[in-house]
Length: 145
Length: 145
DNA sequence: TGTTAATATATCGCGCACGATATAAATTCA
DNA sequence: TGAATTTATATCGTGCGCGATATATTAACA
Image (cartoon, rainbow over all chains, first blue to last red; front, side, top):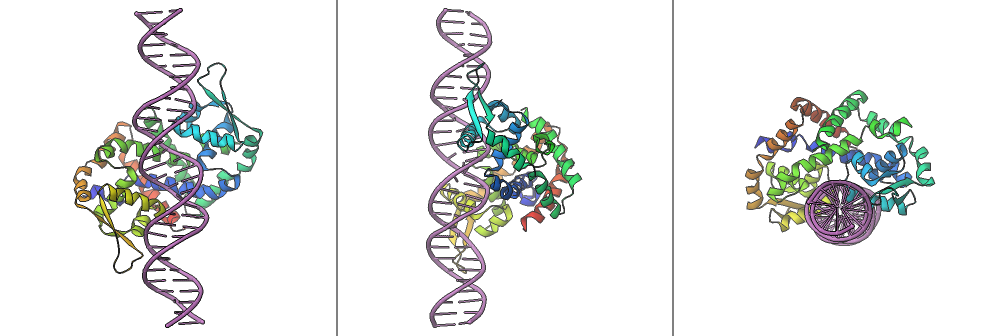
């Protein structure tokens, strides 16, 4: 059963590297008091504040039943404010608080620190970027299923 | 803050594709009555039965505090048997049951079905394999930290 | 040999991640 | 308009995933 050997699996490395990456982020995000999924939500909101839950869901490819409790935790932490949209009361719009906005400055150095970590592991940046672009392409296909 | 835009993130695509891959496996694994991490444990045991928790932990890069409850669930399901090793009673050795072994035949077609899914999404197999090899190399570095 | 340190697994707590289902608001259309 | 459908979010239950800590067994060594 050659196709069932772990080393021949196509998908396992993606699963494993994803967890290793999250672990690599952790020391830096811990200093900011946030988790990796919370960091992703902040990235999205720093880029465009006042998005609905659905918008964040599409950008991060996370179901709303993952995001709702996550956003509530972030509200409790004082990072965001959740409120019903006036033009459509089904929607819940997420706004950054002053504190949520302030965190952006502290987070600015995180991506570079991660890249330095990668450098230590003999990972070539160009290869990394090439891989990222390919994966983004696939995600474009898979997401629209 | 160009480096904090989601589309410029290097690591987010790995996180996203990992979850999309797990979702892609789900319909096939559901028929076998198992989850993706449970499938990975079975892959390892089908290749070499009677491994200790620690061995499985290293191969799958999962902490034992993830594996212990997972293996207990698999024991409850009748797929594996957990027992203390005679030569070292700290170790817990995992053996496949008859049922756990029998599942291998049913799982044999899973990898091909996944690849067919990828094919539908205009994903080139050679690219996929190339990327896998790069990631495996990279895991080799990160894992030994 | 007796004490200390290292190793292997288990337990606890929390935060995702998601399928299934519920609820409420908006839209459609008979 | 009013009932049926769709859309947006929330709730519930289960299974990871992992940091912190506990427990038991073995190894090391004074």
